[in-house]
Amino acid sequence: MKNKITIFALLFIFFILAISNISCSKNNIDKNTIYTSMDPIKFIIDNIKSDEINVGTIMKPGSDPHTFEISPKDISLILNSYAYLKIGIPFEENIVDKINKQNKKFNIISIYENGNNDPHIWLSVKIINVLAENILNELTKLYPQNKSIFDDNYKIFIDKLNQIEKSIRFNIESSKIKSFLIIHPALTYFADDYGLTQIPIEEEGKIPTGNDLIELSKKIKEDKIRFIFSQPEFPSRQVSQFIKDNDLKEYNINFLDYNIFNTLILISEVFLNEGKR
Image (cartoon, rainbow, N blue to C red; front, side, top):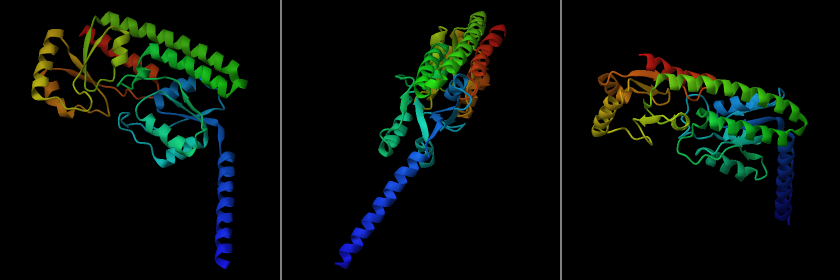
């Protein structure tokens, strides 16, 4: 009899603790904090949101978006926020799965569905326009009381984006460059926007073979390519001799930098400067 009472008492304690945890979890929700994947997306949200809304990111600078793994701590931070705005890149599938296992009712909001292997959607002005409009709509749903603020901020952001796009197009067209080399294919959407041919050295994490590099050298001579883009997370040391042999100027650009306006202008200025060389 005593054993039954003890078991009942323990079950009752566990029940009380579970109820307490649920209650605490609900009380810990910060309705003024939302999360997204990385800094470039945060930049767009920051330009549209109101001042009292905080935007967190889960991918730290220097991480590779192709292989990023979220920590349990970051999952807890997301679950204590009001929503997660996802952009449809591969590593988010794991994040969404982990969030759903703990709270199926959590606000997971899709602001873009990316069907391409290249996750760098923020490097396309066309896609930024789509992202900005979707962010405006979703923020308005989450915080309807701030609609007028979001609308005003969105208009200012789009005006800036249009000016940036004019500068980019001028720089690209003035350069008369049609093809470019890159260590890792991060400028797929950028190239599509401006009718450029992106020639990657490395694809899907595979190091090029000797024959691959020979063919690339032929392409470099045919297209008169004089420069190559590299990224901090994809260093050029494995092909440094190839770069030297083909007399290429290397431009190392952080495509994951927060300020995407600066990044886009920087990329286009490479074309402009190389067109004058």
